Image 1 (cartoon, rainbow, N blue to C red):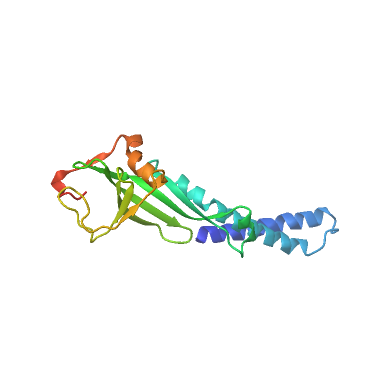
Image 2: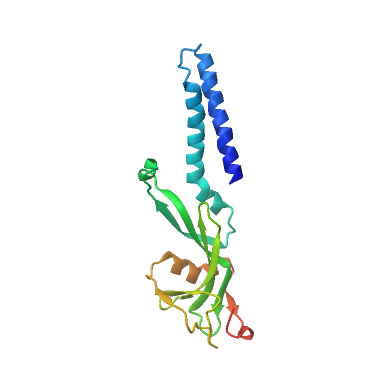
Length: 190
């Protein structure tokens, strides 16, 4: 955040410099107020650029095994330009680095979910996908699994068969050397 603050300040100085140079080159024919307006414009353009590029910069830093499946876009009244080009405020990704397929039931795939929101901490948790039934259950500390590795007390969420989360979770491991199998020595928990 401090780097973005400094970038906005530097952009303000840059806008000031460009406007001041134009004012001088015009032999002071441009109005005097052009210089502070140039500084403000530089800062505003830098703010807008930072807001619109944060998602791409975050995605570029992700490993190949982490696949972005959703970008939430918002239109906000106090940022009228978002009605023309919506602003991405949240990214949801599937982390295939922790992907495991249940040995007893290959249709069950456990994988990581990463939630990244602008100006917020990154949040991660694990989900269990039932690829055959097109559903998902989020795993928490209190989730208990039976001997077959199936959650006993989890809340299942039904997904559409073309849901990007389901497609990436159920097919994502094959693109990265195949899924790792959950060992039976872990007591059904991986």
